Image (cartoon, rainbow, N blue to C red; front, side, top):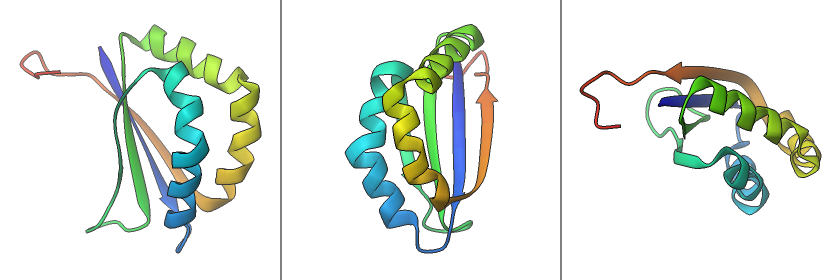
Length: 103
């Protein structure tokens, strides 16, 4: 099992529109393809204008297959241009659990 942590720094003032678009359209496209979303967050203290979302996958190969399926989705390719202009930076990390981690 691995967890993917995707974080985006948004343009100042873009958080409400980004969350609206993700909530009304984006997550509905991602969830059936990517599967197990562990959480979707925005920061309140520290780095501002930041969104973090976590996805669990069975393996790196599972993640690769699901991400390729999302990228090939016509609904996703139509949605991405709506949110991309709101994002300044994108970061991605794959997290491996420690042997004693509960997940």
